[in-house]
Length: 338
Image (cartoon, rainbow, N blue to C red):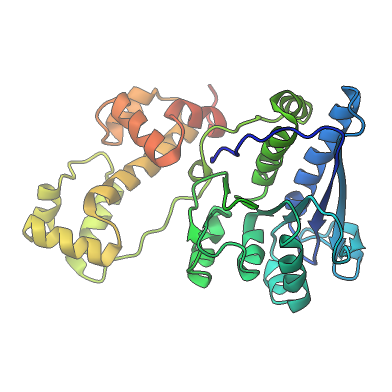
């Protein structure tokens, strides 16, 4: 998660925030930031700073009723007129984002307000709207892990990173990962505007972390890796997956495929898209994730069973791949009784 640069906190300023609504918008992408900004205003007022805070509204093309992807109906104001003094523009995602980004009026409005607003924020695959408007060209950006591939394919000028919870993409544009990550980013923006104490108060009121540990990988479903075309390489994949804790050094895998280590490594990487060692590590990590979720076995036992050898090796692997330790992962995702 990229830190947002600290700026001088301006007092006595009510900041206008507009959140774009459209048919099929993801409700929490919209409501999450809305509640963070309005809660911040309440906290500021309680602290005797009623002239500070946020004036938040939902807007849409033409205004009126909009239906979220889950059927919740919201009432939106019309899009602000050109020249309106906007501080923050939030572009949420949802399954309706494809239709929204094909709407030339919507994209033209985003392009216009981006020139004058202090910042534009996308949540989830709302990054597709920002990319369509040209706001992310040449910039790092994140989105929901399930849409990262689409964003990278359709907008190759964008440097997509599926790991961060949010990232500052440019001086005026921020992108957040999926759904609740919009809350994380909104809290960070409140902290940037009014300081850590106010942001922490909002986080406590909403029963949230001020800074969520780790990145998106801990939430992502295990990635399905392609099956190799060559039967010997496929057989090696299946052997690794059926026994993650087995002996899977390059020499062992090459012998199984009846190839030299160098030739095997080249073919495996070419057909699977990942080097054999990285593939083994991925499979072992997925196996350990399941055991952390479903069993109450110790990390030491799971590390040995999944081929990591020691708990420290498994911990280093988890921190590198998942952004959090095995113990943190278990606390977040375990389904087995303690």
